[in-house]
Amino acid sequence: MIDVDRYLAALGVDRPAAPTAEALWALHRAHAERIAYETIDIHLERPTGISAEESVARILRGRGGYCFHLNGAFSELLTALGYDVTRHWGSVQDHPDDPAGVVGNHLTLSVWLDGERWLVDTGLANILYEPLPLREGTYTQEPYSYTLAPSEALPGGWRFTKVPGGGFTALDFATGPVELSSFTEEHVRLSTSPESGFTRVLMAQIRDAKGAYSLRGCVLRRIEAGGTDERTIDSAEEWFDMLTGVFRLDLADIDAPARERLWRRVRTAHELREAEK
Image 1: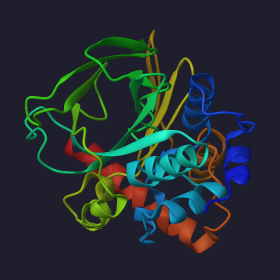
Image 2: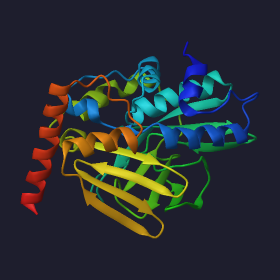
Image 3: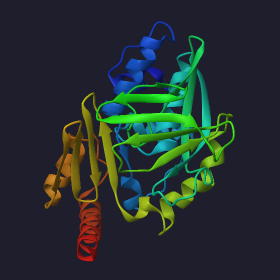
């Protein structure tokens, strides 16, 4: 069992009287606005688990995570509130030449509500602000436009894409249910392999009604419908202040020596990428 009231307090949302569409939308928006997509523990070399209980505990202590953590925790909350939630196996392609629908590197969710199934995803780098109807079409949630169409790689599944690009190319996901534990091996690969993008670049992202903030290493971007503003964070003090301020992260458990190591690692990786340009 999870502490539903503490989870709702972290989201700043009152407990809904019933599992309604209005309440689901409010919960999804609050999760996108308050719980960051982030990979800090990977760069601190602190292993994390992906059980729903562990992920909820992360959120309650002021941290975020990536899809296995965020959607795993959110699915547990929604289920506790009475929603009909299904977890789905997904494959995110980071580049156009990545094979579609092959690697189960993403956990996504759907909710059956009012006679229709809805795509719910708080772990897709905070791309979605509100649920989408799980039917073919084009949808807009500033600053992004989305398309949903049948997946050619996963028969019976769906393909999700967004414009503008950046972050990932597309997501294919199956419609059948999957257990959270089935992602354990992929979680280990993503969080430890030197070939994983998660180990190469520290990331944090958070969403609001008008756009999104995105951090990759030392580069902070604000993405809105009118364009993208970008700047490089040059000092450790500003970088940590930005993580706690913009991304709402509680970093109290990272002591001074660990902060110094983390900043050195992030800054060194940034300088190497700049030198390769």
